[in-house]
Length: 117
Length: 117
Image 1 (cartoon, one colour):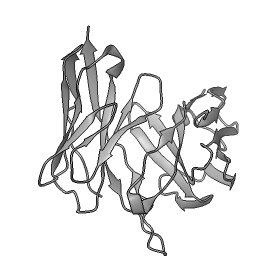
Image 2 (cartoon, chains in turn brown, orange):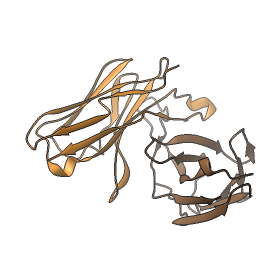
Image 3 (tube, rainbow over the protein chains, first blue to last red):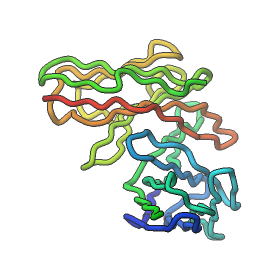
Image 4 (cartoon, rainbow over the protein chains, first blue to last red):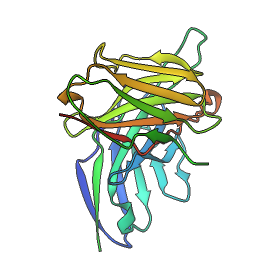
């Protein structure tokens, strides 16, 4: 299983950009990079995912290195509500007899993001 | 859409009692996941279903745990007999699995906080 490495914690100030790094040096060519976050006392929520190209959505941007061995989740303007645990995950391919990949997600410890007012 | 619905939200029970956790996935989703989260072990995948069929139950800790999905709109996770070490937050998540498009966004419920005394 491909694994990811993230810093245990990071801090930011409100209204400033935040760059959350993730290393995945053993990534395979077909692994998608997923980011989830978990707000206090809630279930995880999907943030963004990508394969090779950088991706943007209303929540964040995902910058993927050219060799795909690392990626960075970018929150353009942190708010207090962005304080959460952020998980970088590589989708595990699970093939059944028919060859369809169901791709389970295995969560690591994540990065605890603290946002200061 | 109401999202993934879990019940009960909180459960306190005595050691040795049977506990049943319930989950209603998002309508139209064909994959369902059960996770357990503790401070020590983080977020662990217990079992997941695709089209109501269990695909991977390697995360189920022991025979005291069982999960069923009798139809596309309902799943249960049962612990019998319960033990204090089963105390955790149990999350259910659902997904519309579209392998050809690399779509694997999971939507999590609010969780059930289980305390076994």
